[in-house]
Image 1: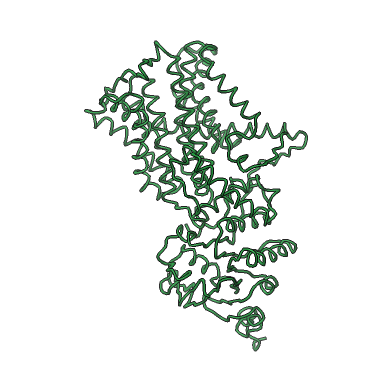
Image 2: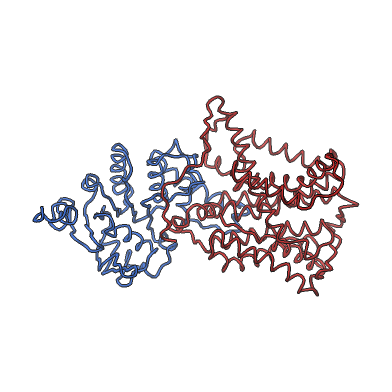
Length: 360
Length: 256
């Protein structure tokens, strides 16, 4: 177990606790950069997919894990980000501008939607946002002149600084683009967490009443969280649409929202690592399932198998490991670090002392 | 000099009058206690000052400013901080982060600056930490600094909550039952802290407390409430010996 002897305030502020941790993340980054040489194009595509899901997951994590607001409407923001980005590109903007602008537009729309929606709490908010997701499906069909409706749209070719990024002819470049996006988003996310806004998010999540008593404007904080969350998810959605190359109203069904939510629960709510671990599960589970059914000698696809397994995994996690995969890893690490002094109830959720709900 | 003034304040929940024409004045630099039987409306007075409730009539002024014009989240910016009867901490965050939320009203950087972690953000973070570190030293919270609230014992949470209020560098500190659920030793500590908060930090304290031992040791003045109305006001001894107060707690002597 490492003991941190803190000698300056920066010790708590900087990104990494110590040199060893910085080294570990640098090694991970080096591995990610070297990945195109280590695996073939098929798995590189899968890795890109994981990064895209991670971006979307980070968006929802900020809202659900950090600010405590459940949303089943994030597929709508994925769609918005995607269509905004592609429409801007078709209007002649270079990708490098259209992409972040698409995210910002989605974020602003998200913040606007949040103003009425966030008056709702818990499951009511989830249902309201679910309605948004379903509505988006119809809106895409209705706004046919812009969105291409049911027929869909083809992603325009992407050029970054004159280099064409195409997933077939240049999968490595695609992978690096997704990696850069996810790195930038993660850095912004971390920066928020170590700043007053991130603490205000946690304050709103854990106790609205005392957040207010400390001067946190609840409505404003929630709206900002929703906006940033929608923006990040929009960026992920744009990547997803562009990676799929063809997309229509059915690309961004509300099922995606549920998968996103499942992803962050399985990964570990409230942890950045959780979004990544969840993305790995989401992206590779269909592959694992098809390999498993193949090896069982089944030639026909079993309808609903994927959805069923997804649901089962989610239920099992909520019942037995509410802290998700990352929470499990923290427990294992604590056990090893403190061996043999780790106690079984170290991570047990304490029932909190009577909370005042009277002022709600 | 009066810091906080309640003038003829009445609050009704439907047919129930929770606070009835209450007038009181808390002077700068004093420790003032609200006492009274359960349901007397002590915490309701706190919630009125925090603007969680709006009175049907009456005026509340703080340092000459009309509190009733402010939203709940604007009250702290005047320099009013509070604790809660049933501890309202941010359970999933560390002690340090909880105290840092107390610094929320002192933030100056914008969202974009924070996202990019510009040097201004880091400079401000250092200032916040310095202020929080002073509170940690003052309340002996060093062992719990990086612990999550969810795993801390009740007594420590109580202290952390007071620390969070102190971190905001208030002028008026509202303590809702600071000693409830504390051991004899912890209550003793609380007494010294409240003394020091007034003497060293120059913070005015308004508290609700049942422990008359603590109240008589730290408070300059006491106001007794029953059924939302003022029963008596004065020094702890005066209030404790006031016939109306004895009656409210014990019933009339005649019936016995």
